[in-house]
Image 1 (tube, rainbow, N blue to C red):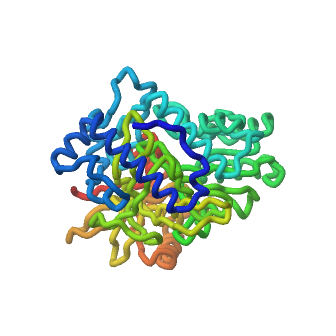
Image 2: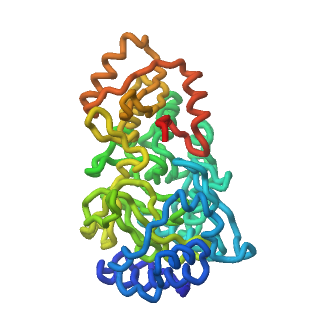
Image 3: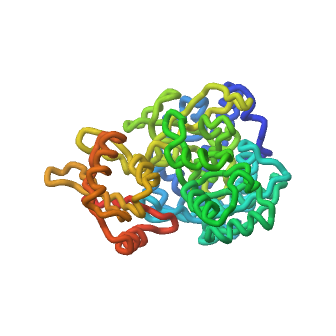
Amino acid sequence: MDHQRFDPNLAFASLDVQERYAENKLRELLEYLETNSPFYQRRFQAKGLSAKGFGHIGELQDFPFTTKEELQQYNWDFLCVPRNAVREYMTSSGTMGASVVIALTEQDLQRLAYNEQQSFLCADGQPGDTYQLALTLDRMFMAGMAYYSGIRAMGASVIRTGPGLPQMQWETIQRMGTNSLVAVPSFLLNLMTWAKEHGISLQQSGIKKVICIGENLRNPDFTLRDLAGKIHAEWPIQLYGTYAATELQTAFTECSTGKGGHHQPDLIWVEIVDDSGTVLPDGEAGEVVISTLGIEGMPLLRYKTGDIAALYAEPCSCGRKSKRLGPIIGRKGQRIKYHGTTLYPAAIFDVMANEPIVKEYLLELTLDALGNDDLILRLAVDEAPDSCKSFLEEMFQSRLRVKPKIVFTALQELQQLIAQNSGRKISRFLDSRIK
């Protein structure tokens, strides 16, 4: 594989130029996999495929998808380099199953830093900024390493506070003059509450922008979700949404227009497919499928992420002509059909995260006696259950057109259930359906 320098200006070129670049890089990827990947060597041979037959982008559809289950089952068969060429091992969070190991070479680590450098620049980052990382850098977590490396590559300063308590975060902000944060949006609510309780002016805090990770900021029409709207209304800062997955080693990051995460065309190729695997036109929502470009250790071809979103091709007012990935609507494996309505857990979570009387929540998906999806919403509230049940049911009916079964649970018991259901990331969705 030709590991020439990546092109940060490619995102500003026409889509035709980006596609021609991708064709060359995808051809290199196929040749590299055919030569070095035990998994893809078997796959190509079984399907009678060869890199030599690849001529243009449309022919990529002749090659099969790669699934998370295959990556889990044949993890080490995806490794394309000797083990002594690996410089770091990281793991996915295993949201929908067992985690997988991702092995990175030195060049992969440099690519990861470049990816986030470009992401932070897209989100109006500057060399003089000071970023505070309110997330973990341990436990083989790729995102923390990526942000840290990208900020440094951009020439900005970085403070590794980790996901510590609000008091420590604010003390660090005030002492170090932090002007930018990298954090989970819901954690910003904790920072805001602590600030108001301790006389800290949000307007004069010095924080100008936040790179938001792990949670959606926007609805499919790009309007702010309730959580983001609440933050923005009380704290006049710029919020930038992101989308990434460990397996991709690449991020989609919003610019200040907030119209989707910008595709980095020199690092990745994106397709959106329907349930039958047919590639959908721009603007239609389907499963996000990724082919990685320029990765040595564990490159992936047509990897099905399980996430549902749409691509948008109109040039952005920021000057980039690269496509933009819209907000993640949900995960394909978490799609729920309930009383004739299709929805995803994220829609319910958005309602719960912004309801003051709700202290904690867990959504459980089961099957009823007829084998249909059934929803149970376990809630810990700070009011008498009888007094708020009707209010909550009516709120769900008006917002989502469904009424999940509400089961009130003691806060400590519910926290224990959530802890048992969570790995590295907090998970408030429990799928108890019989497989």
